[in-house]
Image 1: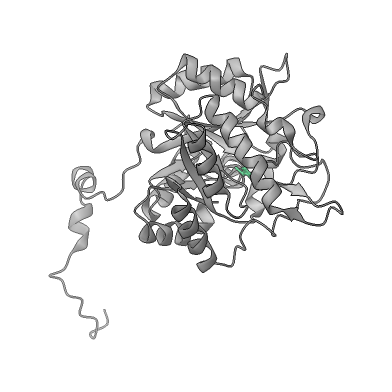
Image 2: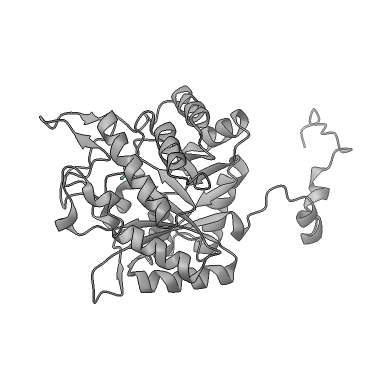
Length: 331
Ligand code: PBG
C-alpha cells in the first residue's frame, strides 16, 4: 500500500448503505403512480381494436372503447391521469386545421366518454395543430408556405382549447410553442365560464429528434419524408435562458403547470425551471426516450424493469413533480 495514502477512516458513508432497511430509510426520491400521466394514442380506424406503433414496442393506438379499458387498468394501479393524442384520419386534415375544434373530433369524443365512465380520471387534452394540418406543422402556414403564422394559429388554438374543455378535459395542454397562447387561451376559457379548466403549458419544448416515433404514431410525419423542421417555434436544444424566459412568460400568462420536454436529455432544464417557479413542474419522457430503452430491452441488452425505473427516477430527482411516460401503465 502507498504509505502516503491516509484516508480518514472516521468517515464511513457506506454505513448508510449497509442494509435494505437503511437504504430505504435514507432514500431521497420516491416515484409514485399518482405522479404519472399516461399518453394514449387514439384511432378511429374501425375494426382495428388496437394497432401497434412499430417504433414503440408494446405501445398501441386505441379505439375509444379500448382506451376506456386502459383507463380502468390504470386506476387499479393508482395512476389517475391520461393525455390522449389522436391519430387523425387523413381526410380530416386541412390547411386551416378546422377539425381541431370540432366538438365531435376523436379527441373530444374520447374525453367525453372517459369522463362519463371514469370521472375520477384527470384528462390533459393536447392543444396543438400538428395532428390536424395536412403538412404536420403545429401552426397555420403563410400563403407561400414558408412561415408559421403566430397570431392566426393562436386563434385556432384557443378554439381548440375551448372545445376540449367543453368536452370535459380537466386541463388543456398547449404543446405548440406559439407566442402568447397561454394568456389568450386563459382569457378564452374564462370568458366562457370555464375558470375551473387548468392549463399545463409545454413551456420548454425543444426542437428534438427524440419525437420521431410519436410522429409515426399519430401520423403527423409523411412516410419516408425528412423530419419536419420545427425550429422556428420549438426551442434550440443548445439554450437554457430561452427556456427559463418561456417558463416565466407562461407563468405570468396564467399557466397552472409548467412542462419541460423531452425529459432525459434536459434534466438541467427541469432542475432550473423547478428552482425558478412555485408552480408544479412536469416533464415529458418522449417517444424516442421510450423507444431507446424498449428496443435495447427487446434485444436483451438492458434490463427493462430496472432501466425504466431509473430513467423515471432521474427525471423525478431533477425536480419534476409530474411525469408523462408511455410506461405509466406498466410502472
Ligand atoms: C407536437 C407534439 C410532439 C409530441 C407531442 N406533441 C412533438 C412534435 O411532433 O413536434 C411528441 C411526444 C413524443 O415524442 O412522445 N404538438
